[in-house]
Length: 588
Image 1 (cartoon, one colour):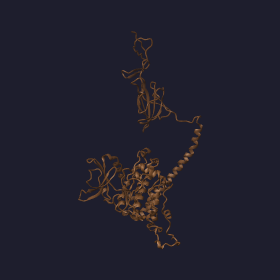
Image 2: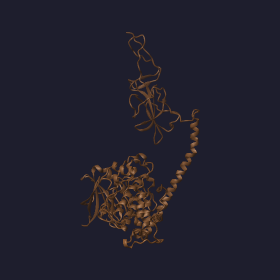
Image 3: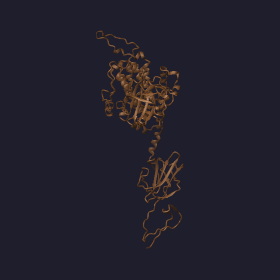
Image 4: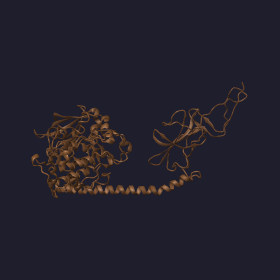
């Protein structure tokens, strides 16, 4: 049998795992034949993972890899991957079978003799990837050139250059508008806080900066204001004895409970909200919001502490207890006076305004919070007949670091009856965080309507019913609310008799502006709070029914001309008097 030998300048010795680059003969002994049979050789590729500072992803560069490896299989090709990292750039070179995915992408250019980089979305993020078929072809990397105007595209280039000044002008105008809006809101905030301090000076003569520094407890709380300062959040569970179930929601149950004092037989009455283990996410969200000290406000439920009860497989939130219950229960049992309506409505608006505000009264920045489930059952009535907002299980901190995707993942949440039109329609403007605040304003308007419907100042007071109570069932679904709110543009009825009371007429006008179908046309919570505070400054003019409602007995009616005194102005004029500038965003 005759043996035939062939030589190759560069010899790959797979059996011993290294390269021989000398001009040595390499004899392959095969059976005799007229022509040598085809014997495929595995490719030689650069095989490294190198960090670089010079290869910036433009033009061309080398991999700076000093290791050349023999691919394991003859059908593998050379690959290079360029990534940008925190310190600079990295290049990974390797062998790979193009029939298989690499980092989640398929190679489609491996028949090329040059390694031309293409942008690909890999499992590790965006990267530039190339593949080629020649030996060590992944050492020289070619990057696609930046776009340059070609003779074929002169019109596009001219249009682009012409539009540039217009775009700059738009940016300047938008920037000036945003600056004015921020400046105006800050100015209104200062005026509002100034008016509050005039009406309700802080205990002990503390100024605003002192209050901001120490975050004063609400001296009117129904639970001890010193209790929260003595709690140790990191020790064993507190000695709490559950007493009575007072509420039940979608995610948790609320108990009246006794917090026993370790040094005596005395106890503090608290509320304990208990979440099952599977509702950890809701508990954590509410705990995180409550734990923010900037949330502290007299019209926000006073938070004490949170606990994880591993033995009971439960998560607890411990807060102040308010024996009057929630607003829905209170309105069901009581008809309220005009003065009580003022206190309840004004305190609710102040609580929501504090949630939405991006600054504390002292001027320190604060992260705005949206409730996303405002309704009368999520508002508690305190002993002084003011409101405090509770239940932040669906709350959302509008942190500036949130991306559009983060906001989009928040989903369509809340109670269908109180959902704003844009939430029902799932068309929130995720580019503007003010859109989330506007949904709270719509919900607050429905709660204000429920309060007003139970006020004796409107005349005939009917039994309590929630907003849209006669139009939908007890627990309406989203589709049912779409029919009423979107298709029919329906809103709860405001009877003409309500408007005969001048103060109620102002509240009704405010309600209508808050539930406007256009989110941009709604008032801000800050503006609503300011309007309702203005009502307190006009007690003589706005605390009685209009003279038009005082009818003479039938036998005393005579056709006479009556001159209306100057002080008895029309309701529309009163609304103009107390209306305040609510920033540019509050008007259509």
